Amino acid sequence: MQTRYLPAQHPDTAAIAAKIIKNGGLVAIPTETVYGLGANGLDEAAVAKIFEAKGRPQDNPLILHISGPEQIELFCHHIPQKAYDLAEAFWPGPLTIVLPAKECVPKRTTGGLSTVAVRCPDHDAAREIIRLSGVPIAAPSANISGKPSTTTAQHVLHDHDGKIDAIVDGGPCRVGVESTIVDLTEERPRLLRPGGIGPEALKAVLGDLIVDKAVTSQVDKDEVVKAPGMKYRHYAPQEPVVIVSGSREQAAAYIHRHFEPGDRVLCFEEELPLYQDCAPLSYGQEADVSTLSAGLFAALRELDDPTIHQVYARCPVGGGIAYAVQNRLKKAAAFHIVDAEEEL
Ligand code: TXA
Ligand code: MG
Image (cartoon, helix red, strand yellow):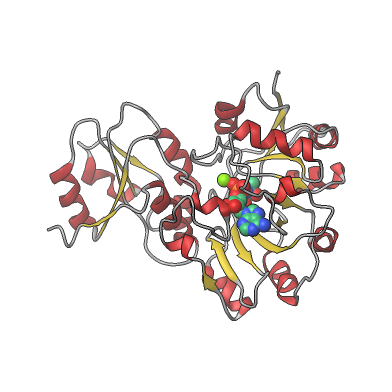
């Protein structure tokens, strides 16, 4: 099939995209986090096409994108006050809330679970398409399963040109890492995936937050985890990635000692002069962590190259969005981290 290219700013784009969604097709849509591969979340056959296009495991549930908090009760029941508190504080925005699912949500969308994830994206084009289509849009990140997420329309076309009905180009995604996911189906709120909203901001609203173990450690693919997506290899270029922690100087000393031809260094812009002979690639400025989150996936895609042997990566420290960058990089590195200070 020919994939239609629809610029977000064109006045007819939202209506065309919404019509394709209503008719059971697949449309890649921009959001503030990453591009999503969208379909009617209530239509099993349409949802099945998402899994097929991505090569996504059937047990990995999808997020329903809705146009506002008033839609939560259409798809969820037993909604605690905390859900509304979170929606009021962070929607539209990079926060996904997991709640008990109503019967109308197909098991294909929820990966067989009795819960469903909902989010209202902070992107005008995305919300307009949801509104005009009249259905919740199920949309995983628009990458092929396991690959780094898509933060530009070009990334999406690279992975799906000719396999999906249309792409809406809204330019590069502002946040660059996926939404934060909070599960509100248990007694205590649980962070399933760090993202655009930092854990401190969540705690300020919720008062209490457990961090799921899949966030901080590698989980086995046979383990039962709360967010099934967390157990799969993710975000990773094809070659091994190792995170080198420690000060700028310690890390540079370690990397120079181990660097071999064919290796690459993924670092902060401020560090480029330190790695001139190590094929460095910067993904943003350490002094402005939002540039790191915005640039991370594009950089990981650039490093997804069979001629590269090994990537040494530098990772920001701290909370807020840095916490999400750490999580994505650790997953790309399969939690392989060396401490340059200890290795001196
Ligand atoms: O920012 C985002 O969230 C992007 C944009 C497109 O909105 N979407 C996204 O979707 O990242 P995806 O499918 O790549 O990641 C969704 C994650 C997966 O790890 C999945 O397992 C988890 O959400 N998830 C979905 N529904 C769930 C549920 N009912 N319970 C627990 N985890 C769920
Ligand atoms: Mg994804």
